[in-house]
Length: 261
Image 1 (cartoon, one colour):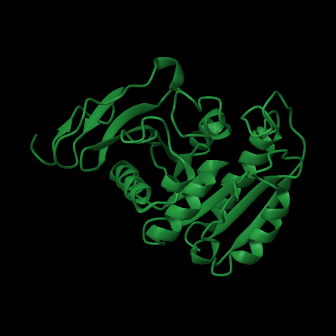
Image 2 (cartoon, rainbow, N blue to C red):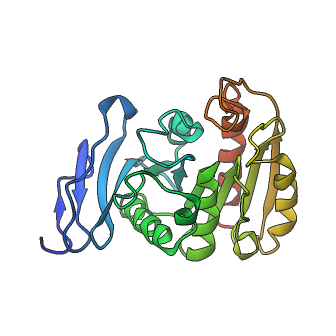
């Protein structure tokens, strides 16, 4: 396979991009997972490694966001995740989005160690380049639960030339995050009623002080939400189940008011 080969067009329902070298057969997304206006692309992010991405390039968008679901990050396992449920609200407000799947070399999903790794940052750097090919402008990372580990770690590794800001929601604070290395505007969102032991509200309170180098930082606290089963699951206060609108609007407002700061 020649380098730089592009099969298909970005306006189609399915695209394969070969950044360099050869790739394995790409995965697919069931049609029921995609929202109107969305499509998929398979990127080669590292030698021999591919990553499936859901995207929606909004015409005229000034800003893009990469949404990073929690859990193990595999689409088939996180379809009900908070960010998967609300992603359409971002595009309706004029933001382009990309939602990456777990990469092909993590077929069982991503653990926290991988989310903190240089390999993960390399993968997301390719997703950033994808967004900027069709929706030029600054890119934010928005994570939830385990996905906030990705957002914080990747922002610390890539720096402000790649990531202009981050949003951390229902963050899993286990083993700490490189908050002191983050130098971009950072919004922390947490539910006071979060019952997940890996995501205590007390750690969200402390995080603002630890974000010593962030040029702007804020904690947004919400309360309530429905609880159905696992307190660390999507259908719980941890996943803002039933109170999504209380969370999404402040996130979008923060992104719009701090892009370029």
